[in-house]
Image (cartoon, rainbow, N blue to C red; front, side, top):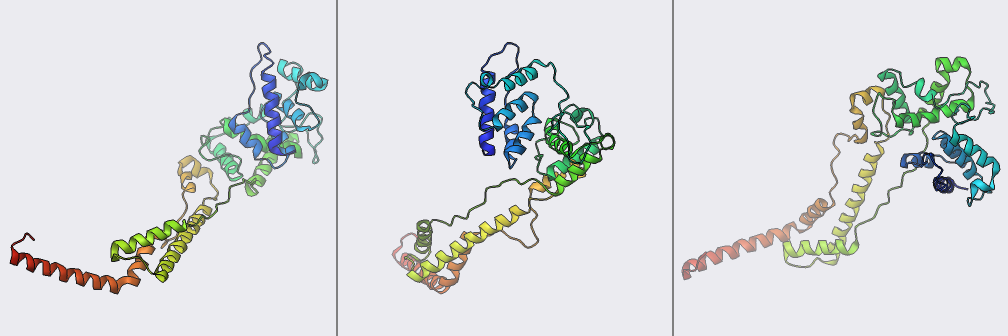
Length: 334
């Protein structure tokens, strides 16, 4: 099962649960941001753990969705243990601490079961200073867990909580001792690791599409007809066509080079000062100029037709002079 298939199964289960129309039950849904977080995981196992950080009921549904042997048709009635768990969560009775990323029975490899809960994600961090929160947010941004512009710097808002839940879930899976929870050393260790080794964000690779050859041909022909009142010769057509193609390739490569400069780290100070916007503007090296295929075409045209243009210009001047003399003799308007 792929991550995308898991998400689709989970959405179908949630839709089915919402259609049950249980009186007094709140409707569940996966927001667009929730789906982005789930799609950011590379395996179904990680996506399942991420789903458990979103909502307790969604976590129960996610367990069911992650098992490909479970039938989505009539899921509640066909699986007694699932139905019992669902009802327990929905009713709010008998529910233990809402641990992030683990269960109460989980045994961490590094020891320590003082796990972080959903409530800890708020109570232990929302009261931190603006500077401390901004520092955490900067690391979350650098870890590709939090998107610039989607949160308020220095505020422990919903987007920040959701991103940080991933850090706390990882800390829980490693193990958290009471001392580590008190001094924050475990989550700090995990956050540093994530910021230095960010999650992979799949970006569509840019593909160079050269100018349409017929359009290039017409552009070159139009230039010759307008300036020299003739069609280009075969070698002229090839020469100017090659220039336009090569300069178009250069323009594309320059744009890709500038785009690569956007992947830079941010700091808490930049977040609070609002200067992080500089990080979505590429740095341009001194001396770098815009590549204009059309300008290069005209420059090459002038270079190879300079003498012809000069000769035509002289002929036009002679014709104009003769016309002025003739008009003065005949009395015709100039």
